[in-house]
Amino acid sequence: MWTGPRAAAEPSTSPSCVICLVLAALCRLEKLENESKTNQDKFEEITSKWGSAKEKTIPQDLWDVLNLQQQQCALLIEEKNKLISELQQELKSKDDQYVPGQWELRSRCLGRG
Image (cartoon, rainbow, N blue to C red; front, side):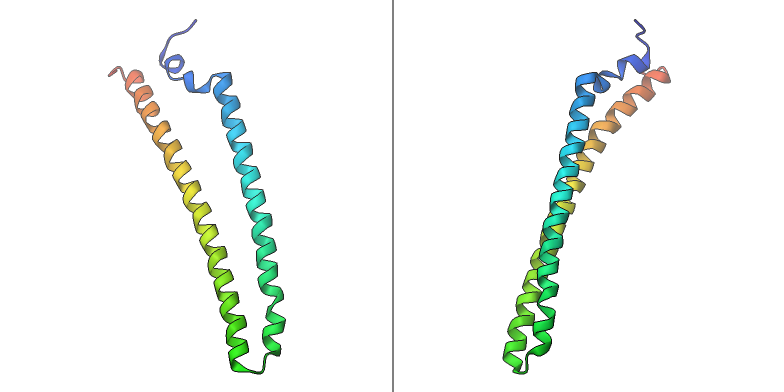
């Protein structure tokens, strides 16, 4: 068995790790698809009320409808921002795992490790 720098850096690509990575990617994809569907439904609910807002003639009624829509939009944006934050944290975590392994491999290849 070859024990050069590449072999030393490959434990993270073992079959069980690859399976874990694929499963994580599938779970992430499923989560994103579910999030997309849910948010699309919420957006359609919000936009469906725009017609009723146009029909309001009393300013207070119009304000109530528009205020409710604004709250619903803010909630939708908050959910999207939460998802973005989770994905950014996951990306940072993967970057933190990847970078040390690359420096170790580079050092070995350059004969410094």
